[in-house]
Image 1 (spheres, rainbow, N blue to C red):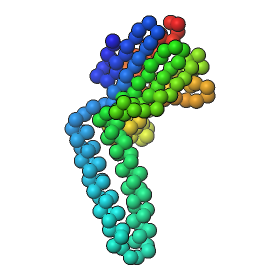
Image 2: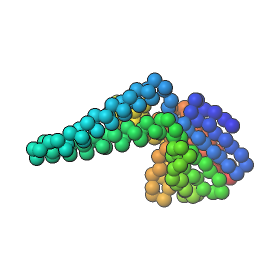
Image 3: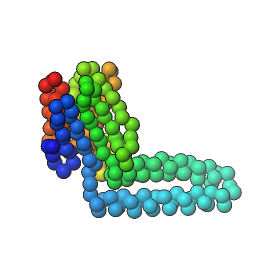
Image 4: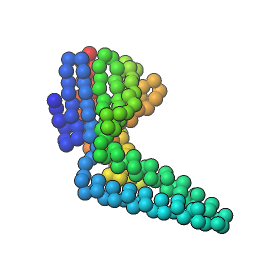
Length: 181
């Protein structure tokens, strides 16, 4: 087994290439994220409870709009928190197929691609001056994929928040394994 950095492990056998990518870990930031999630949840519950005590229509409408935004961000932070605690990306190649899974607590949908149809396996370049790139590479977000390929006119991205060195090593391992066949 080959280990790249703190987060990537690669296992190569005769007819199998397996890559596991763990999310960035920082116990202090994870604690802050949990406290943020807790405070956000309490605030939303307080507003929801007060909805039933308000009689004015405009105030009720405001609370409904507020709660819709609150629910969206509650979902996003909960998703990021669970991903940081127990998520991982798995890529394995065997039997002419590439399998990709975002696994959380040993569950997750497996996507399957025929590797003879895969084109343009490449590194997604970072733009240090792009606002969206900075947000997607932050600890608080689930996202920031760094590798992509095209399969049957569908673009598939994976390798969340990898460093250039890690992403290039994964691309190198995948291309060597596929073209070795």
